Image 1 (tube, one colour):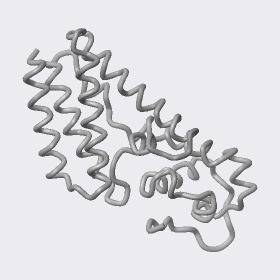
Image 2 (cartoon, one colour):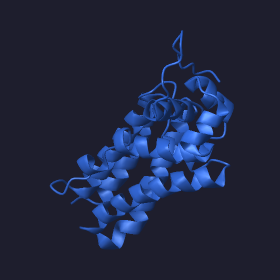
Image 3 (spheres, helix red, strand yellow):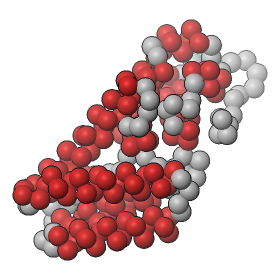
Length: 196
Protein backbone atom coordinates (compact mmCIF):
# COMPACT_ATOMS: atom_id res chain seq x y z
CA UNK A 1 0.00 0.00 0.00
CA UNK A 2 1.25 3.47 -0.81
CA UNK A 3 -1.51 5.50 0.82
CA UNK A 4 -0.74 6.11 4.47
CA UNK A 5 -3.59 6.92 6.80
CA UNK A 6 -2.11 8.53 9.92
CA UNK A 7 -2.83 6.74 13.18
CA UNK A 8 -3.09 8.58 16.44
CA UNK A 9 -0.37 7.93 19.01
CA UNK A 10 -1.03 7.03 22.60
CA UNK A 11 -4.01 5.27 24.08
CA UNK A 12 -6.45 4.07 21.39
CA UNK A 13 -9.68 5.98 21.32
CA UNK A 14 -13.09 4.41 21.08
CA UNK A 15 -13.78 2.79 17.72
CA UNK A 16 -15.96 5.00 15.50
CA UNK A 17 -17.61 3.00 12.66
CA UNK A 18 -18.40 6.14 10.62
CA UNK A 19 -14.80 7.29 10.73
CA UNK A 20 -13.73 3.74 9.88
CA UNK A 21 -15.93 3.82 6.76
CA UNK A 22 -14.34 7.14 5.75
CA UNK A 23 -10.83 5.72 6.12
CA UNK A 24 -11.80 2.53 4.28
CA UNK A 25 -13.25 4.64 1.46
CA UNK A 26 -9.85 6.27 1.02
CA UNK A 27 -8.15 2.89 0.88
CA UNK A 28 -10.62 1.30 -1.55
CA UNK A 29 -10.65 4.34 -3.81
CA UNK A 30 -6.87 4.63 -3.89
CA UNK A 31 -6.08 0.95 -4.42
CA UNK A 32 -9.24 -0.78 -5.60
CA UNK A 33 -11.30 -3.31 -3.71
CA UNK A 34 -9.19 -6.34 -4.59
CA UNK A 35 -5.86 -4.79 -3.54
CA UNK A 36 -7.05 -3.87 -0.03
CA UNK A 37 -6.97 -6.68 2.51
CA UNK A 38 -8.74 -6.93 5.84
CA UNK A 39 -5.27 -6.63 7.42
CA UNK A 40 -4.74 -3.32 5.56
CA UNK A 41 -8.05 -2.02 6.87
CA UNK A 42 -7.54 -3.15 10.47
CA UNK A 43 -4.04 -1.66 10.49
CA UNK A 44 -5.28 1.68 9.13
CA UNK A 45 -8.11 1.72 11.68
CA UNK A 46 -5.97 0.57 14.57
CA UNK A 47 -8.33 -2.27 15.45
CA UNK A 48 -8.06 -6.04 15.60
CA UNK A 49 -9.82 -8.44 13.22
CA UNK A 50 -12.55 -9.47 15.70
CA UNK A 51 -13.54 -5.81 16.11
CA UNK A 52 -13.57 -5.42 12.34
CA UNK A 53 -15.80 -8.45 11.78
CA UNK A 54 -18.08 -7.44 14.65
CA UNK A 55 -18.59 -3.99 13.14
CA UNK A 56 -18.82 -4.86 9.43
CA UNK A 57 -19.33 -8.60 9.07
CA UNK A 58 -16.89 -8.89 6.17
CA UNK A 59 -14.74 -6.87 3.82
CA UNK A 60 -17.64 -6.82 1.34
CA UNK A 61 -19.94 -5.60 4.11
CA UNK A 62 -17.59 -2.71 4.80
CA UNK A 63 -17.38 -2.01 1.07
CA UNK A 64 -21.18 -1.80 0.83
CA UNK A 65 -21.11 0.87 3.54
CA UNK A 66 -18.31 2.67 1.73
CA UNK A 67 -20.34 2.71 -1.49
CA UNK A 68 -23.35 4.10 0.35
CA UNK A 69 -21.22 6.86 1.89
CA UNK A 70 -19.62 7.64 -1.47
CA UNK A 71 -23.00 7.80 -3.17
CA UNK A 72 -24.37 10.21 -0.55
CA UNK A 73 -21.42 12.61 -0.54
CA UNK A 74 -18.82 12.05 -3.23
CA UNK A 75 -20.65 10.90 -6.33
CA UNK A 76 -21.27 13.15 -9.32
CA UNK A 77 -24.42 15.25 -8.60
CA UNK A 78 -26.64 13.95 -11.38
CA UNK A 79 -29.74 15.85 -10.23
CA UNK A 80 -27.84 19.13 -10.35
CA UNK A 81 -26.40 18.50 -13.83
CA UNK A 82 -29.36 16.91 -15.61
CA UNK A 83 -31.64 19.92 -15.76
CA UNK A 84 -35.07 20.11 -17.36
CA UNK A 85 -34.55 23.75 -18.38
CA UNK A 86 -31.54 23.05 -20.65
CA UNK A 87 -31.05 20.96 -23.79
CA UNK A 88 -30.49 17.29 -23.02
CA UNK A 89 -27.31 17.02 -25.11
CA UNK A 90 -25.83 20.07 -23.40
CA UNK A 91 -26.53 18.61 -19.96
CA UNK A 92 -25.05 15.24 -20.89
CA UNK A 93 -21.96 16.98 -22.23
CA UNK A 94 -21.68 18.89 -18.94
CA UNK A 95 -22.03 15.59 -17.07
CA UNK A 96 -19.07 14.10 -18.93
CA UNK A 97 -16.91 17.14 -18.21
CA UNK A 98 -17.86 17.02 -14.54
CA UNK A 99 -17.01 13.31 -14.48
CA UNK A 100 -13.56 14.12 -15.84
CA UNK A 101 -13.07 16.65 -13.04
CA UNK A 102 -14.31 14.28 -10.34
CA UNK A 103 -12.11 11.44 -11.55
CA UNK A 104 -8.89 13.40 -11.04
CA UNK A 105 -9.93 15.48 -8.02
CA UNK A 106 -8.06 13.22 -5.60
CA UNK A 107 -4.54 12.51 -6.89
CA UNK A 108 -4.20 9.37 -4.74
CA UNK A 109 -7.68 8.09 -5.61
CA UNK A 110 -8.29 8.63 -9.31
CA UNK A 111 -11.30 7.33 -11.16
CA UNK A 112 -14.77 6.52 -9.89
CA UNK A 113 -15.02 4.29 -6.83
CA UNK A 114 -18.26 2.75 -8.13
CA UNK A 115 -17.15 2.16 -11.72
CA UNK A 116 -13.84 0.69 -10.64
CA UNK A 117 -15.69 -1.48 -8.13
CA UNK A 118 -17.73 -3.08 -10.90
CA UNK A 119 -14.48 -4.75 -11.97
CA UNK A 120 -13.77 -6.31 -8.55
CA UNK A 121 -13.00 -10.03 -8.48
CA UNK A 122 -15.17 -10.50 -5.39
CA UNK A 123 -18.69 -11.23 -6.63
CA UNK A 124 -20.46 -9.60 -3.68
CA UNK A 125 -18.41 -6.39 -3.96
CA UNK A 126 -18.84 -6.31 -7.73
CA UNK A 127 -22.62 -6.68 -7.40
CA UNK A 128 -22.78 -3.94 -4.76
CA UNK A 129 -20.91 -1.54 -7.04
CA UNK A 130 -22.97 -2.64 -10.03
CA UNK A 131 -26.19 -1.81 -8.16
CA UNK A 132 -25.07 1.81 -7.71
CA UNK A 133 -23.83 1.98 -11.28
CA UNK A 134 -27.14 0.73 -12.67
CA UNK A 135 -29.04 3.19 -10.49
CA UNK A 136 -27.01 6.07 -11.94
CA UNK A 137 -27.60 4.78 -15.46
CA UNK A 138 -31.30 4.63 -14.64
CA UNK A 139 -31.29 8.32 -13.67
CA UNK A 140 -29.55 9.22 -16.94
CA UNK A 141 -31.90 7.03 -19.01
CA UNK A 142 -34.99 8.53 -17.36
CA UNK A 143 -33.67 12.04 -17.97
CA UNK A 144 -33.10 11.38 -21.68
CA UNK A 145 -36.38 9.48 -22.08
CA UNK A 146 -38.43 12.40 -20.76
CA UNK A 147 -37.73 14.29 -24.01
CA UNK A 148 -36.17 11.73 -26.35
CA UNK A 149 -37.63 8.31 -25.48
CA UNK A 150 -36.46 6.66 -28.70
CA UNK A 151 -32.84 7.63 -27.95
CA UNK A 152 -32.74 6.88 -24.24
CA UNK A 153 -31.15 3.41 -24.23
CA UNK A 154 -28.62 4.08 -26.97
CA UNK A 155 -27.41 7.38 -25.53
CA UNK A 156 -27.38 6.13 -21.96
CA UNK A 157 -25.06 3.35 -23.11
CA UNK A 158 -22.88 5.95 -24.85
CA UNK A 159 -22.66 8.18 -21.78
CA UNK A 160 -22.04 5.24 -19.45
CA UNK A 161 -19.34 3.79 -21.69
CA UNK A 162 -17.64 7.17 -21.97
CA UNK A 163 -17.70 7.63 -18.20
CA UNK A 164 -16.21 4.15 -17.71
CA UNK A 165 -13.44 5.01 -20.12
CA UNK A 166 -12.75 8.34 -18.42
CA UNK A 167 -12.54 6.59 -15.05
CA UNK A 168 -10.16 3.94 -16.38
CA UNK A 169 -7.94 6.54 -18.03
CA UNK A 170 -7.86 8.60 -14.82
CA UNK A 171 -6.72 5.46 -12.95
CA UNK A 172 -4.03 4.99 -15.60
CA UNK A 173 -2.64 8.48 -15.07
CA UNK A 174 -4.39 10.73 -17.58
CA UNK A 175 -4.52 14.28 -16.27
CA UNK A 176 -7.50 16.62 -16.30
CA UNK A 177 -6.56 18.23 -19.61
CA UNK A 178 -6.56 14.89 -21.43
CA UNK A 179 -9.78 13.72 -19.79
CA UNK A 180 -11.55 16.98 -20.59
CA UNK A 181 -10.44 16.76 -24.21
CA UNK A 182 -12.07 13.33 -24.45
CA UNK A 183 -15.18 14.44 -22.55
CA UNK A 184 -15.59 17.47 -24.81
CA UNK A 185 -15.23 15.41 -27.96
CA UNK A 186 -17.91 13.01 -26.70
CA UNK A 187 -20.02 16.00 -25.65
CA UNK A 188 -19.96 17.36 -29.20
CA UNK A 189 -21.50 14.13 -30.45
CA UNK A 190 -24.20 14.36 -27.79
CA UNK A 191 -25.12 17.95 -28.57
CA UNK A 192 -25.38 17.07 -32.27
CA UNK A 193 -27.60 14.07 -31.51
CA UNK A 194 -29.80 15.93 -29.03
CA UNK A 195 -29.83 19.64 -29.81
CA UNK A 196 -32.99 20.29 -27.76
